[in-house]
Length: 272
Image (cartoon, rainbow, N blue to C red; front, side, top):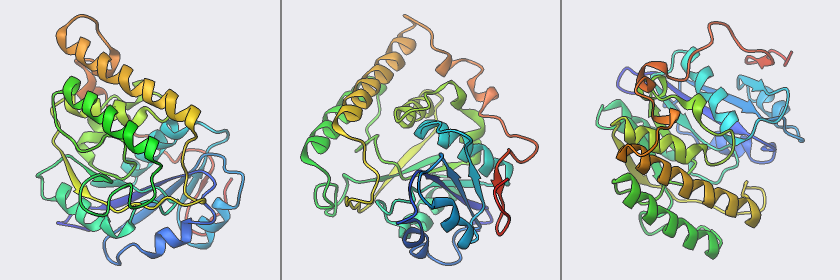
């Protein structure tokens, strides 16, 4: 626990068998109360590694996509009583050593969400091996989003994030895409509903085993990002209404299932 708040780390996994153990090994002891892995129908031994490491896991019966994986992650973390939820990719691209710092910033009640930025600091994305075209796209999309959302973040595209329970219970996340643009839609919602977003500098690593979308998927993602920012702005202007920013949004939330979902492996238990 941090500041008497229960910390649950969610691991949205797809083909993470080669990096999962390394990721978990670098988490500082005494910081995390529980890990939960959601496997999006991997084609490798991700679930077997999770079982060996005694990590509770859920297996999707079919691939739902990155955003769909996160929806399951957050529902399960809330169901398990999390006060602070940290999303950490199990592909070892982001430093697990920052979980405590990110969690504390949420536990201090200064922020509702904290992002691990690959852009801030002197150990940024290019130093970590981010392809140059992705870096340029990141900077362009971030500049457009800052203008249209009316805030100032160093980047919107990091997959390393910490959230308060209140934020996850409030945002209508089920209205969002099951694809990669889910991350941006979530930040737009948090901004619209007035949640406080902070950032810390996070070293990152690009290597063959780390997950990374190809050029075609990157283009689709970029177009989705621009559409998300524009949708936010025209909703704010009152020119069109989006269910993503419904007036009931803070009451609807993501929902918490009263019983464990199907295909759960808890600690040493096997996947059903």
